[in-house]
Image 1 (cartoon, rainbow, N blue to C red):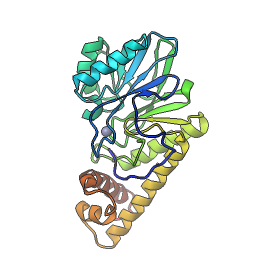
Image 2 (tube, helix red, strand yellow):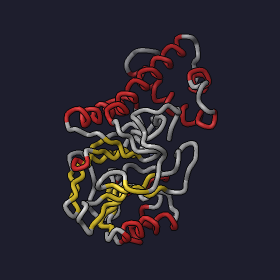
Image 3 (cartoon, helix red, strand yellow):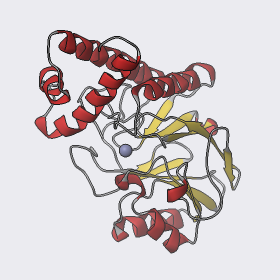
Image 4 (cartoon, rainbow, N blue to C red):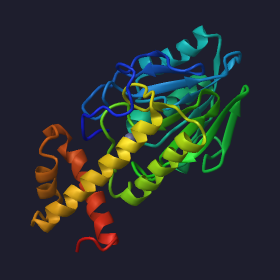
Length: 277
Ligand SMILES: [Zn+2]
């Protein structure tokens, strides 16, 4: 989900199916739209010499896509051993139960309602499959249940909708909260500064080769939008719809309903911090 068209973080072309790092392969789902960019990126992640793979975000309930993911892993000599979800939005998670059926895997997610099997997923968890190591990084804000997955061996992070390959994401109020989102961006920035993460493998759009630049851009963009919303309220724009029409005038109208969610999140944040009333 996106609300702008700028290009942070040195995107690597368009979103394409195929290898992105030594361990991560993208299979692009056929659900392109203004909200999903080129479509959902379904990631197959595995150690180079392993027969076992992890799939992150099977995507929409599209049997052709789900089977294509299984086949792609199979052609590389791999069996899908585990399914993970970055969050519960249908363009990422709707196909998870069917995918689990096709592969005989468990589904792990932060939200218990999305899990299949008895294992959850949360802060500090380290997922290991066939020698592969993925560290779970809680990144709420786009939604309350949003997670990112740090892939240290490739100096990469899989961000779901928290950071996109193009544009910026929606803080999906009321489930998504701006204060959480800013904390999550700072957590991702610390991964780039302190843990050497270079590459963003996003849930939509192209791979980003400058993870720190992308996160800095997102933080700057959020601060800029927040200042614009604060000024709009001071200038007498009161309802979320009025603020959207004023602040997001440069954004395609098809994205205004999503922008309104972000504006509601921003108004809530400004009120909570006593910046408007
Ligand atoms: Zn989402």
